[in-house]
Amino acid sequence: MRYTPLLNQLRPLALGLLVSTPLAAGAVTFQAEDYNAFSDTTAGNTGGVYRNDDVDIEATSDTGGGYNIGWTEAGEWLTYDNLTIPASGQYIVRARVATDTGATISLDLNGGSILLGELALPATGGWQSWQTVETQVALDAGTYSLGVYAATGGWNLNWIEIIPTGVNPSPSEQTFEAEDYNEAYDTTAGNTGGAYRTGDVDIEATSDTGGGYNIGWTETGEWLSYTGLEVPTAGNYDIQVRAASGSGGTLSLDLNGGTTLLGEVNIPNTGGWQNWQTLTLNAYLPAGNHSLGVYATTGGWNLNWIKASPAGGTPPTPNPTVTWSDEFDSIDTNTWNFETGGGGWGNNELQYYTNGNNAYIQFDPQAGSNVLVIEARQEQGGQCWWGGNCGYTSTRMNTRNKHSFQYGRMEARIKLPKAQGIWPAFWMLGDNFNTQGWPQGGELDIMEHVGTNNITSGALHGPGYSGNTPITGHLDHAQPIEQTYNVYAVEWDANGIRWFVNDINFYSISRAQVEQYGQWVYDQPFWFLLNVAVGGNWPGDPDHANYSTQRMYVDYVRVYQ
Image (cartoon, rainbow, N blue to C red; front, side):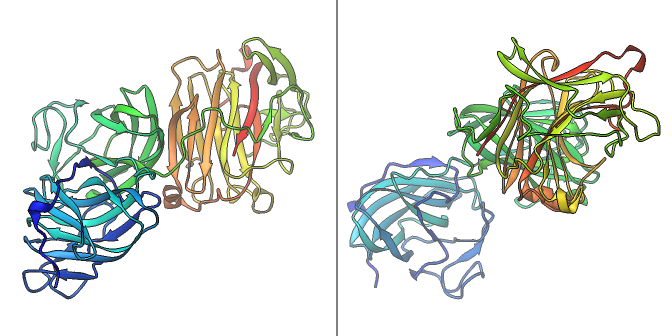
């Protein structure tokens, strides 16, 4: 028979509130429904799921799914065996709770022989509106049973967790309901859906899980902004977007009015305007308080909510160690191969690639160092794919069979040419290209540029997404790309790839997102390529009559692993 605690002997505990998930390293977590003993004042499992006794259990809509206990009444209790405390000291106790009214629970060890104190639970806004309450307690080393006692009823419990104070809990997960924007721009007058609030943003009731509202009738160029994105620790975060579309579309995410671009989310045709999918963008977020922006790159999608949560990645080291680099004090033929020929290179390109005649090293005061220069000249080259001699020459160089890399940060500092028909690129091909060909071997484009604009792009080509239908993201530079050096980079691991320009993460994609299009082939080493193409299917022909020599300047190529 379990004790009934004397509540007036319990010392109230100071609480901190945060929204989080039980992901802290070194933590001991008990799912509420996995109790070892209980006392419940009503017969039967009201929720009707998971176990057949008197504790009331239901499916939870909290992050991670599973079950929660509910329909609690004063005097009920639960115990959880095998709580092992490895060392005496201060510990954080965290409980994941939901309550419509507010309530009080008490915590103890070993059937009430050690009282830990009370937790005052705030009204969270609903029985499936979850918050995490936490407190700090002193615990002696040993193995215990943990008790949870309903000093008052009327609360739901998903899980309870004990963490050494030397282990930091995961930073917060934050959710923004689409309709609760702080600022917005809409191209059409009035709220077409007619729900929730006045203004020009179109809002309707949603049939998605959890109910509420969604924004819809989106048009290209519209945007929404949400204040109060708290990032406690800089690092990689997963930004989840709950979207539906009958046609497909694209949105981009940013911070602080577009000053930090996070990347694009490609929204597929989900099968209907109320057929919902959760899409994830992995992005690096700086610490601080930010506004989160949503921009309709193309319209035609509905949005229910956005969630930001830690991805478990490690933020970039301020001064990381370079594991491999070429600083281009010379062209090292032990590192680079020159590809030659005028076969069009799969794109009907017009240049003939020479055996190093179009590449040289020079000192560039703007870079403050020696740089590699690749020249695309208008001059007669070798035989071209169309029958005559190519009218242009250039360089394409690679590290194939000499240096290849799997995972890490790959970057180059480059000043680009900008002219009609010119196509500079910094990219990678997989080692499997040698045996499987393209696109089965995989292509990772770190930087490409065509034409006279200031837009650079990153892309993936693989089985199911190649040629004219790659996976791709773009960045429109604020400054002319031909006037200054920029650092073009990817950060690549087993879970996804992120593209950067000058440490702005402009596009990210996860492995799971790639696998929606086709096979993930980025779990192998890749090797580098640098080239400047002339003409071809993407950039079109150059201005033959007024052509001047175009140059790409490369300060360095570096790998961090």
